[in-house]
Length: 254
Image (cartoon, rainbow, N blue to C red; front, top):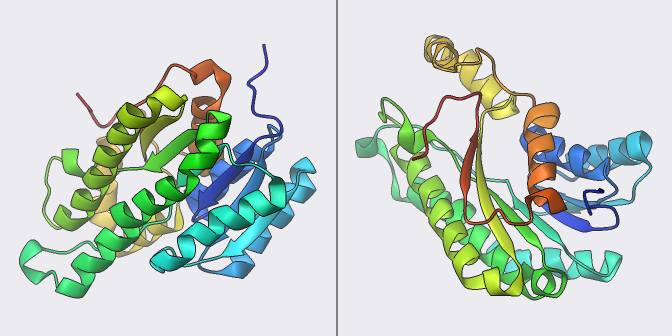
């Protein structure tokens, strides 16, 4: 049995580094044509160059800050014009503001909601007709932040991620009849954001790792990317509307 991914086309936002790049590599190694979207073109070009070198697959870099909402439909249009189809959408790029509720400013709140649930929804809407044609898959990045033992400073970040979970579940309910699957993953991985957190909040980071039953932070490609590839494959064709923590057993999503 094959995984059914060869020849498919995927858009991945935030694909210039970290988790997005890991997902891009895992899909590309299975024959998926990747569109690597990110704010910094050189990082996306680096992802594309590595894909071509490692796997010999076609890939396309696109520079776009997803907070520029009017540019999002163009990502889908350019993808379809280049590769003729769209089968997988991975909404990975997001902003993160970690601070007390009382200190949050309107600009920060708006940015979180624009780059989080708003951009995610608009990308899903733009991709919808093409995913409908192919029976596609949506993977949205959420977080276990709302399940933290201590939510202090994580209110806004958790709120934007919980909104994304709600939109994902709704897409699974409304679009399932078109054979479109929509799932969330809640990952822990060695991303640049986590590296920053570890450096700037070392005591909190060390305490966090101790709460992971497997005792380690996941790898962007080998742990997160490989799971996403499986979730997009034919082996997961009956899985939709789920929020799955890929975190070494830390979070309970019941």
